[in-house]
Image (cartoon, rainbow, N blue to C red):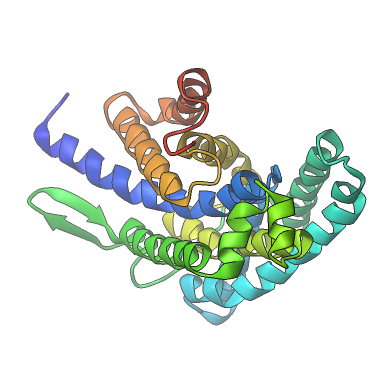
Length: 290
């Protein structure tokens, strides 16, 4: 039954969920939209970040967000290593289409199977002071376990956007897939720039993974559920558009929240694929695409 309180609560939850989706999708926007690398394993790295946050929280009581930030440089180095393997094996030989996609599928399953072997298939969660309490303003419930990740996601999003838009290397990352020759004429090595961009994209998954396990319990295969969301957001945004990623993530979050609230949560997973099909059919260049 429709009520104004239910409607307002759905808006608040949708906005908070959209901010989280933006954090999860940011790295894929960089890899897929700006570097032209279809990193299908991106959600698996997010789950890996979740498990690292869980391990540090359960063993030493560390705050999961601080763990995510602390491990971001480690994930950056892992991303650089993964790109070097991808470049030497596929991109350097102009064979990055189908075989390169299979490579990232392999990376995804290696991460997933490794986590299953280490932790099993039970759901894991973390403990933190902001998990549990809710704020209520004029009958609008604001769960802190979603509010805190939203604020962190926006901060990370703003930091990455400023780096990409205000620095030479950042602008080079945004340009490398469009015109490699022009980039070389500006004394920038396209391979080094793509390596930097891919590393940054993977680094964001460390923080996104910490935010995910704050919001919901996780298990190794749950990353597959987010493949549709992240690609739907990347396509709807307009490939490579950082501001468009935030807008598209908010649209997806609001759509899922309304569907879950008024039609039932079992319908919400279909929203991402519906938006993806709609975008491909009616606006394939995306909201902010050229």
